[in-house]
Length: 150
Picture 1 (cartoon, rainbow, N blue to C red):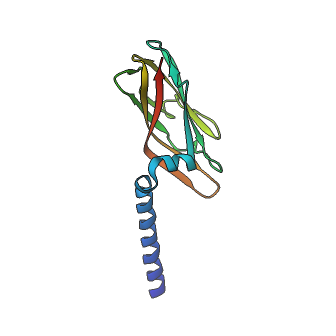
Picture 2: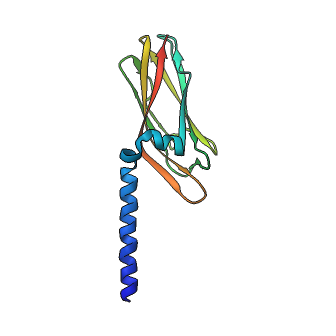
Picture 3: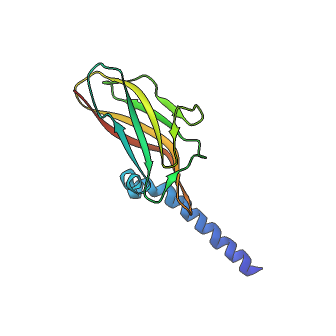
C-alpha cells in the first residue's frame, strides 16, 4: 500500500511538471520554435495594392509527422494596425469559416491596406496538431504576419 501511495505521488508530481513545462513552453522555446516544429503559417498574398478589398488566405500547415486535429474547436482572432482595415476579425470551426483538411487549416480574411510599406497582421489562434502519440494544443498563439502595401 505504501508503494502504491508513493507511486501516486510521483505520478502527480510528474503531471504537474508536464503542465508547468507546457505553460512555460512559449517563454522558454518561443513561438517561433514551436511554429517550426509543430506547424507553419503563410499568408497569401503578402503584397497588396492600396485601398483594394482583398481576401488574404492564412494557411496553418501541420509540421512534419503531425496532422491537423479536426476534433479541436479551433478559433482565430485577427487584428491589424491602423493601416490594415479588417472586415471580419473572428473565425472558428464552429462558425464553419475555417477550412480544415487532414494536414492544414485555412482562413480567408477580407481586408484593405490603407498605407504603403510594411504592415502587420496579428492572428491569435487556439488550435491543435497531433502525431501518432500525442496532441499539441496551442492556446491564444500569437502569430505576426507581414504584409506590404504597394
